[in-house]
Structures are given as structure tokens and as C-alpha cells.
Amino acid sequence: MLSAERNERLTRVGRGTPMGELLRRYWHPVAPVLELRERRVKAVRLLGEDLVLFVRRDGSHGLIGRGCPHRGADLSYGWVDGDQLRCPYHGWAFDGGGRCTEQPFEEAGGRPGFAAKVRVDAYPTQTLGGLVWAYLGPDPAPLLPNFEMFGWNQGFTEIMITELPCNWFQCHENGMDPVHFEWLHSNWTAEQHEPGTPRRAGAHLTVDFAEFDFGFICGREVTDGDPEVRPVSRSNSVTEGGMLCLWPYTLMTGRTVEWRVPMDDTRTLNITRHYAVLPDDVPGSGQDPDLLPYWYGPLTDGSTGRMLTGHPMNQDFAAWVGQGETADRTTEHLGRADAGITLLRRRFLEELERVAAGLDPAGTVRDPAANERIELPILARSAFRNGIAREKVDALIRLHRPYAHGAGRYPDIQAGRPEDIRRMHETAAGLRPGR
Image (cartoon, rainbow, N blue to C red):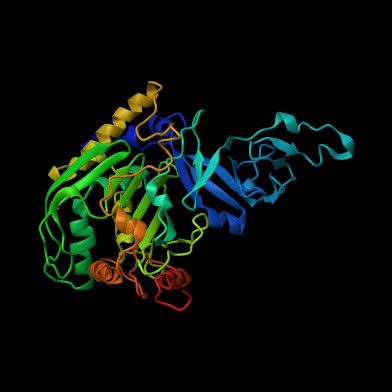
């Protein structure tokens, strides 16, 4: 149980709120790079701020306030003109630094205009891992952490995006809750597809958490369960694929990295970067690491209006959204299974105090040498870097088939995967002509 005051401190992300000020000390993924190549201008909602992202001639990105300071028109409907974003209403233009560079009517006939007096908010951006990242905090900005998974190339990588109508913190707490795998992604999945089936997942006996420089290692001890479905190691160490909860809101479960990006207090942009390890008998995916395929996944069934629950990611979404726009933590009854939740909340409250005292929050990086490549506590690193034998890929497919669904050779982890991306994956794995 948490007090209403502490719940608000953990969930509110607007400018000037304690959590909003903490989160502004980190870099945030906001869009796939490829999406901006295709559309050039995109509306962004981040930490309660309405922004617009656009691509300049050299391929770099500008991120500025969305409301035109002339009369408030939405700049996301504008167009890129050289290195400026031009407002569709009266043609005012703005550069990536937020400066007004042109006022066509005010400057007509050689008049001086007053563009030099007009600015909009502007924020720095970077690209990494196929994503555009933004920093909304004070200078000097920390470095964008260069985690090792951004350099892996023996896998097929795709980016999945879904907007969720709930607060970011209840999404992020999921990353410190290993026990939910047993029920939400195993027993409940079996019950949906085969009602009345016996429980088939291994039962959790203990959970364990260890903090390191960039977050938390989530360990667990699990009984074997039914080996035909999901053999699980009896170990308190991190699982073979690696289950890591990283600052400020990232979950890494082996091949999959999720960011629960706070759009505002009641909306979250869930961005997933899924790296499907390829067999070691193919020479990598051939993908451009900066231009990874992406897609937007549905949240509900269009025919029923109910949330989709047939895929692991969608099962998580249903659990998070089902807690309401912002979970009421004043009525909870936490138990031993929630040790990670309690730890996460305590550490965030401590980090709020650090930021209020003028210190960097946990997980920030300022040493360029240390940021050349940040290795994480992952046991399966060799497989992720080098691929695995094709027969082991087949075994993994059989292992995950009960928990993920899709029409193709490889099971999908989220509903709505486009057929062209499925074909790209299967081609990269040597299952279709073209390799």
C-alpha cells in the first residue's frame, strides 16, 4: 500500500513535478528513424509537452514546440522547407533551435519583421538503435547510453509501437514482477486456448533482485513444470536470456527491449525493439541498423472493442490498462511476490531526492570512454552476438509457440505484425528465397 501523496510523486511527469524533473535527466526514444524518413514531420507527446519532430536536409532531426507562437497553429501539419519547419497557417518558419527564421508577410516589401524576437522551445535529439531520442532536461545533457544490444547484428530486429491509455509507472512495475510470467503468459494463455486445461507452467518458489549501475537484475527460482511446454532452470540468477529492469523505464527480457515512454500522466507510448536471433549459418540479417522496420500494433479487437490478449505483449497491455488511467496504490495488498515492486518504488523515491539535491539520477552516463559500449549482465551474450545452431532455433520456436501466435514460421509476440515484416524475418533466417 502506498500513500496518495507518494503515488502522485511516482506518477506525475509534467514540468516542475518531482518525477517530471527526474525523467527530464534521461534521454527518451520518441520515434523510429525510418518513420521520419517516410513522413518527415511527426507530432510527439512527451512528458506532458506537445512537440513536433522533423528531418532536416542532412538527415538530422529537429524537435521543437508544436504550437506556432504566431497564433497557436499546430506545426505538425507544416512541412520541411530546407532546414526549417514551415507553419501551414501563415508560413512562419522555424529552425531546429526553435528560432523563427522567416515571417513572409511581416517581411514583405523589405520590411524588417520581428522574427528575431520569436522562439519556440527546442530540444536536442540523437539517433541510436533505429530510434530517434530526445532530451528535455537541463544542460549539460548526459550521454545517451550505448548499450551492447544496439551493436548486435546476428538477428532480425523490428520496432513495435503501441499507445496505451494508462500511466507509465504501472507499465514499468511489470518489469519487476517475474511471477506474472507464470500466470499471465502461461496458465492464463493455456486457459484461453484450452479451457479447463491443467496448469502447465512451472511454479515460482522465490524471486530475487540485485541492483547494478544501470538498473536491476530480476532472478527467480521456478519448478520445472511440464517440460513439453516450458522447461525452466532452478536458479536464482538472471534467466538465460537476461531479465533486466533498467533506469528509468526499460525492461530487457533477453532479445526484447521495451521502453514505457511517458507521454503524459495518463498515456504511455510502449516502444518494443525485438531482436530475433538468427541461425549461425546465415550471415546476419543484412539490415541497416539505423533504418529498422517498424509497425504500430492494435490494442483492441475492432469487432468486439475488447482488448486483444492472444499475444504476450497484449496480455501485458490488458493487465496495465485494466488498473485504470493511474493505478490506485492506496488500496493494494502487497505480498512476497511484490518484493521487486516495493524495491522499485523505494529506489525511485530516493532518486527523486537526489535530483532535488542537484545530483544526477541513477543510470546516467557522462564518461565517453565508459559509453563506447556498455555491457550488461547477460548470460546469453554469445548467442545474441553470433547466432545459434539452426536446430536450437527450432527448439526455441517450439518452446515459445504456446505463448506467442502468428501465421508465419516464427511466433509473434504482439498482435498486428504486418505480413511484409514477417516475410523479411523469414528471408533473413534463410526460410525464403533471397538469401
